[in-house]
Amino acid sequence: MIYKVSYVEETGQYPGGIKNEPAPPRIGDRVQIGPRLFQVVAVEEILPPRENFLYLQVTVQVIDGD
Amino acid sequence: MSAVAVFQQVELFRGLSEAQLAEIGQLARLQQHARGQTIFEQGSPADALYIIHSGQVEIAVRTPGGDVYSAVYLGTGQVVGEMGLIDAGRRSAAAIAIEEGTTVYCIPGAALTALCERDTAVGYILMRNIAQDLSFKLRHQDSDA
Image (cartoon, rainbow over all chains, first blue to last red; front, side):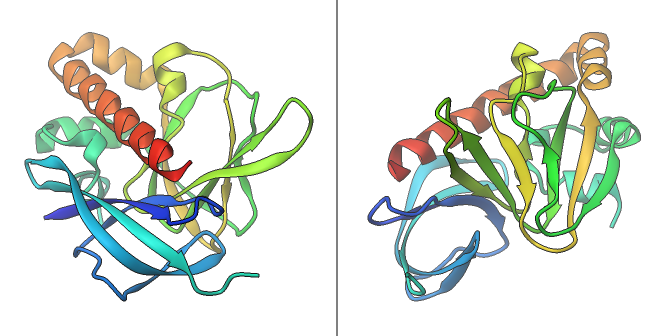
């Protein structure tokens, strides 16, 4: 399975990202999006799977903010 | 890892056979970019699309007032510059490698369009997948606002 992930920052202050992941992100995971480090706070499946692709929206919280 | 093996992990090519992926692989050129290197400039002709193999790419938009903001960061498996394949317009944003050694496959738009017209089964699948990818990006943008 390939997880196509939309990473969305919870306040909208930072741009998010989109990338493929080999495993689904889990709450508490840390992820680098652009120059910043974030922590996963929510994971939601947003579309029905297509073949070997699964579509997730992951809400993240910045942990190295200004 | 071969281009075919990489492309099998890319949603843009979902539904294509190994032979069809190999044909697209013949068109693709692997490029490596240093951190901060521009892959394409906003306003430049959209003559190719790019598949991110590794690293991260910033999509940066310059406003008419001259401010620049980051619209999104794209990582492994994502397609960049596909709008030009659809509308033949100029680049609406710049794409900048933000990790040292970011690698992308560059596929010339004219050659890919020619392949789609020659093999309409491939053309249908690619256009469907591009539409679904653009839809995903719109959903992301709506959630990110």
